[in-house]
Image (cartoon, rainbow, N blue to C red; front, side):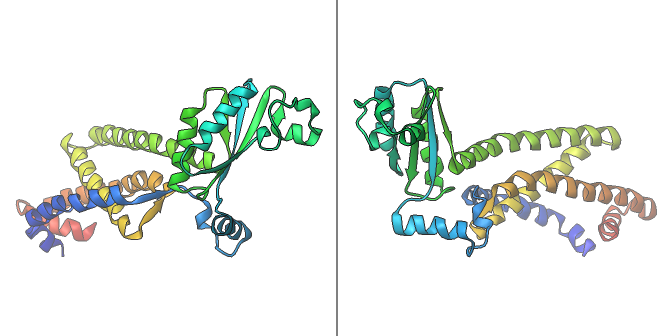
Length: 269
């Protein structure tokens, strides 16, 4: 097998470059799933409850929206804007059960404290999609754009959206740091500065293949996306180093027959 790989190394290289095209398309088209709940068994109460809410009541996710130091009239306007956001089914607030012209002090304490605490007031936002649906996360982002700095959004959907933004912004940083550190270490320990670049380019191609072929699964977990590139870099870098050292050893045996030395190195590695 090693001899065949060495013999057809140029066609293999050309094919590997051409395969980057479908791999890139597959990577782009693979949905990243940020929903932890989907990995739970369907028969548990949490999953059953979510399905019932969506299928029978047309409501899925919900979030709590807190406004600090906002006048009631401004809160009414903000509530109206939130209700216009796509996939927001309903917004429940003080004016859902009483006119804002009625002083809050006249309401029963249980009703008053449900929506207010000190100078803060809370709205309950209900969506028509599930907790981690793409539409829900888009709606969360739109609500945050509408709201000011004195407003805060909580709930599972908001946490999932924050996780998505954090993962997308920091994963690239981790990969870049890993690549830079690998280059420094290899440049200091290898006989040539070019070898680390070749190692990392080949590993980069393998990572893109790995992520691109996930398109057949339809979607992957955000944890997979966050870890797989760095994990694959670490694992396959070892193999690259072993292959290089094995090749150097075989060259001492086979002399100028570099093809046979590499074929034997592949088998030995």
